[in-house]
Length: 189
Image (cartoon, rainbow, N blue to C red):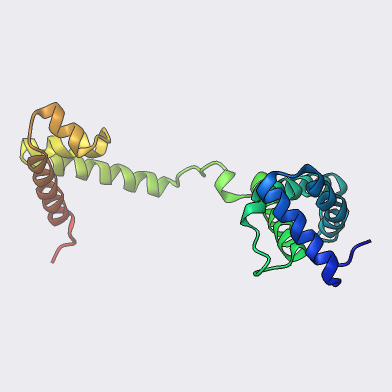
């Protein structure tokens, strides 16, 4: 069994990674796989992965070693440091995926909207009537712009094209209309 603390063993691993990087040397990769695969799997098990997930992640780590061998720099890290960092990162990615996949049925974002309270429904109705009256007080072209932009959710460019108006005209009419609505809805002074 090779130990990374032995300089000759480390040199051999570095040479194998270099051979994989330069020549896609399958024999060198087989040696790397034989040395690291069981260690990586044991490491992943210690990190809390179950047997199946540890096996899958180990395969992914070793595939990454094959693909990313040209990126390995022996001056920056030993082979084991590089490979175990890849394994740790794969485990973190798996944990993040698992968290996203689990649904919490108590999550407020998944619960239906509660029915509106009667006083809020009444307030909303009053607000809608007040807004409709305010729109009637605006010049027709400004009210039209507001309806198209906010009720029909159309873009400024789409409004300009459909009404055959310059884009700047559409934007200024919308700006003026919003400003007038704000003054109409300001609290009494």
